[in-house]
Image (cartoon, rainbow over all chains, first blue to last red; front, side, top):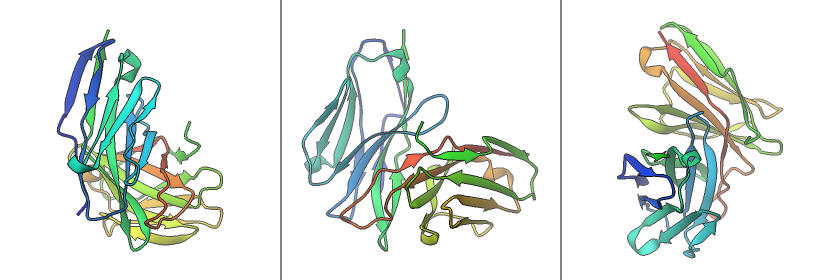
Length: 116
Length: 117
């Protein structure tokens, strides 16, 4: 079955520190997709990135970077030079295809607090 | 702003009642998904519709039902409400339905916070 584990329940760092959020997944599929979403205190879920299982290149977007390692079934997310506005709950998610239809399987989330 | 709208934003009701949550997907998106976020269960997939047809069901209770209308908006109906149904209900949309080769990201609405007293 599809499963996503975010072992870090809460992380607290001081502004400008780098922080890495871990995500480990289990999948029965050879083709799959991984996602990260951000849930700020306002509550909405904001899409950050989608990565397919064939693309193991790391991705960088500004202060955000993602490290996908198929060998260890991990898709970790790093924020460089963190800012207070990065405080949120971050969810890693895995695609699950049911009879051709799609759903997302989410991890439990990591609550990130950036202190000034 | 994801382009997905949900109404109402907050809903407070009593046990045993019935409520309807409404979702309008992003312009052009044919798929609508419903998720429930609760403290004990986390984010759980409930149901998916594609162009008016049900495509997939997750952990959706029999007391819950949904539909997608010809204009592609969707409604989630929750009946015989219990205290444990209190949660944040998200709607998401994506362009396609699915298939192993293409998996579009899902864009989420702001959610409806349901409180059952």
